[in-house]
Amino acid sequence: MGLAKSCEDFLNNVVLVKPVYGWGWARFDKPEIPVPAEINGVPLPFNCRITEFCYHHSELNGAIGKIEAANHIYDSLWTFFYLRVQGTFNFTDEIGYYNIEIGSHPPEVSDEKDWLKFTFGSPIVNGYAHIAESFHLIKKYETRQHEKWEIMRDAMIDQN
Image (cartoon, rainbow, N blue to C red; front, side, top):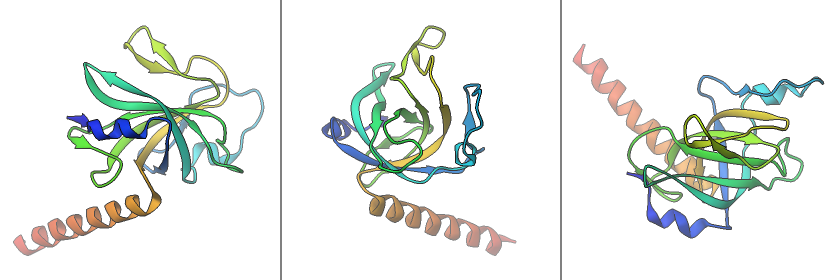
């Protein structure tokens, strides 16, 4: 369960992060100056260079990376992401659904949860994302998921 071992091949390589709507994106820091509206909306997709993988209870579960997306609101910031759901996922054909946080400095291990968090700096935001080797693979995954949901919906309608 968690991320497949093959994901470790992406260390020091770029993956595509496609933020998605969930319960919305939230900001954790308390800025003294106004911030762009995009911070609280779903950001545009961006590239992230994976710098380290994260394990939780001996299971490969997420990664830390540096955002590389010229002209993007989060360019040059740090991010970490970890799986939201159970299963085995990768960055090519079994695309996962992730919690993601973004901050201005590398994340640190949190004492209360033995997990990562951003402890200082601005901005600090979080949300949800799909992450894969390319945007094309994410779109292919999302199309496949949509087709499955349509089949399930049609089966439920047929039962009534």
